[in-house]
Length: 276
Image (cartoon, rainbow, N blue to C red; front, side, top):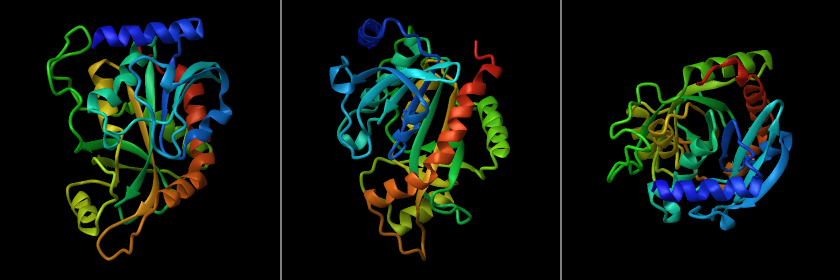
């Protein structure tokens, strides 16, 4: 695996002139507009990158972007990969490992998710405090100690320093946010009412089809994580919840300007945190 990571990293460095990003962003369904606040200097289609999968989902552009937000150098995945597309958990998380070798200090992960907390509303922004992973763990199999430990610690999956900074930014921008636990499942079907109820019973506030494998790999290779969900629909017993992908994209679109403002400022102010 390390050889593949190094090959991919070298390819990207050659294409970007060793751009050396400081922050990485993974943009989930409908959240690709964040790049509007980014001064893009390099674009590389996923299809051209060695060992990268290719996005097959509407709303995921399939482009790796390099540029600047404020005084920070950023790499952004305009669209991510999912287990339900037929890739393994190890394949969908390869970009996270590459970001580490490119020199990234921390990573921002975003997604669209179904709200199961009864206090949530469609288009709410939820900062992720913790998660319950119900996808195959990407670390299953032989471990390469050169990349990370056999048993990575997960007591603080989402960096508290970044969460505190994001809360301060949201308050100053007068943008209301929620906090909660994110649950991942394989998809691609949306949840039944009974499944929504079950996820709530076991402690979830929102459910989606991504993110947790990326967080696991980030911890394995020592990258701090900030995670955020946009609540795209609501589900649970007693609720009529027929969801379409188009409705998810529309709901996320309403929240996108606020989320863009928060993440943009989080990146600019991240210099306040010493990650190394």
